[in-house]
Image (cartoon, rainbow, N blue to C red):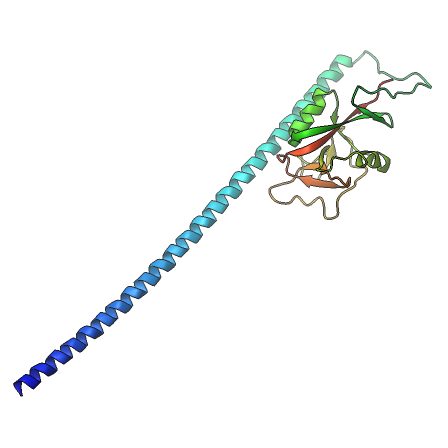
Length: 229
């Protein structure tokens, strides 16, 4: 009987040990699952933080370009004021009655009293603007369907910068000749100021307009200037 009692005690002890090991194993599995879940949550948080960081960097870049545009506009206004000051009292230039002002520099194309230069080469909007100014012109201002048709026939198939922007007041588009938007040729659904702020305008190969990020590089840009007599 003594042996039987000892054997029973051993069986009970073994059963208790097995039960405890099973509980410990379940606890360990539960801890592992909790750790995996926590690790997954940490990864998601890191991805969100990285995405937010990229978004903030992109917004900072867009704001920087908008600031550059505002500074360029201010510089342009100052230059205009200086030129007006130098020319005051000198009288205004006017064409002789009956004369035809249709003379354009080499590589420029004449149309309705203006000369147009169709530039090619990868440029941001501000770079295209300065290039036109270096050519003694400015990014093109479009004021009629006839002028738009002329430009569309010569449009760069990869898109071209034009002189329309709303850098000063969102949604208030101004031409480089400081004239109001008296004619428009927007692509359906545009302007939409998508993404990180689209404050400069490009002309698509179809001739339609699309507001775009000023820091984007386009392969085409169009300058204009008045023809000379």
